Image 1: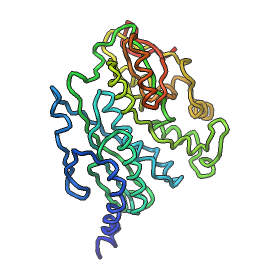
Image 2: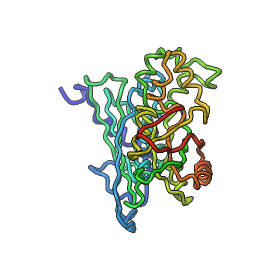
Image 3: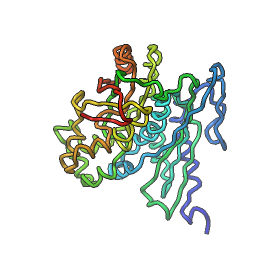
Length: 341
């Protein structure tokens, strides 16, 4: 008996590392001091030594049951983007710049080409957010996961000068809420998605005119990364007073997280067109509207609050970063919370 016969192929692990190196190389920043394959990743503090009060911000998350789609569709090169996005968007919400990212892949069997495919998506997410992929772990766990399945999670660290932290403390009535378009369902609410639609190849490969693509491609579209859009707003000289990443819990849970006591957010549902995938999901699943807004991003992946005088400038900065913004509401005096009308 040996480790390979027990289900763990060390040689496959070595091959996975070699195959992923070409993808990881694309994410390198000058502050990275170690090579892939070491026991830890080292990152120089040069990146933030000139800040008055450098403050580390971090985020950790996984892809969740959206991975089930990847298994069925045998498409593994985009879920890594989701993994990075879920972490770095939270960092950006605090005003932080992502510095580096680490991933964790646990699988039933290490297929080196598949692992490299997954990591190619992680690397792409890091490129989109200017974060270095400085390390990770691939754990082969036979008997724990089915051979063709895996889990994917990650951890990111960023930095912000303390004075630039986005806390929401200065929000006041009259501030404008700008929503930035999502790319679809992102990486939340897939346990419900999988109850509404049959999770088989025939269903997922079916083309729908209203979606302009197959159901599978619409659902697996990777999560938008908003780091560069928020950076563009900051570089335009606009202070982001509050920021909310619309993830699990939709509008009702996430928008209040950016609010101080004494103000509430009022969002107009007709201020933008809800993407077809959400309309289809609500229709096919007979899901009531409030539950949709309490579960999904409904086409808005990030909400930022700015002074009314800076709204136009913020909109232009977001457009310049390649994203689509909408004025979706405003801040009003009242009990902390959100009103969708």
